[in-house]
Length: 113
Image (cartoon, rainbow, N blue to C red; front, side, top):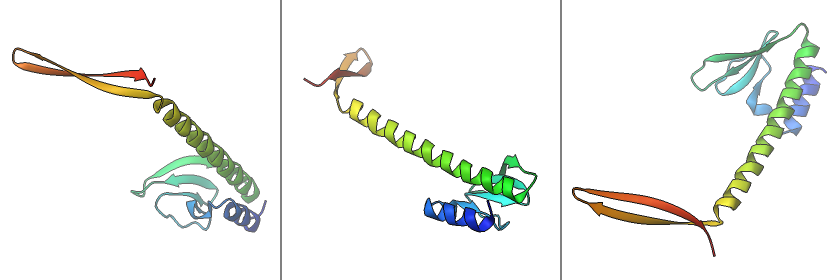
C-alpha cells in the first residue's frame, strides 16, 4: 500500500485525524516517525507500538491497526449498550439503620416487577 492509498482509506474510515503520517508529532495521535509507529498522548509522551522494514509494511500495518481499533470501539459500544439495558431491569432501594452514634445506609437492588 502507498501513503496516498493509506491516507484515502483512513479518510474513508473517518479516522485520518487520529493519525500523523507526515512525521509530525501531534498530541493524542498515532504517529509514524520514520519506520517507527507510536501513540503520542495528550502530554506529548510517546508509547512505542511497532517498527517496520519498509514503507509498504508500515502502511499495511497502520491500516490493519485502524480497522482493529474501529472493531474494538464497536464491540465496546455494543457491550456498553447491553450493560445499560441490563441495568434498566433493576430498581435500587436504600435502607437506613441507626444505632448508637452511627447511621448506616445500604443499597439493595431487585428486579423490576
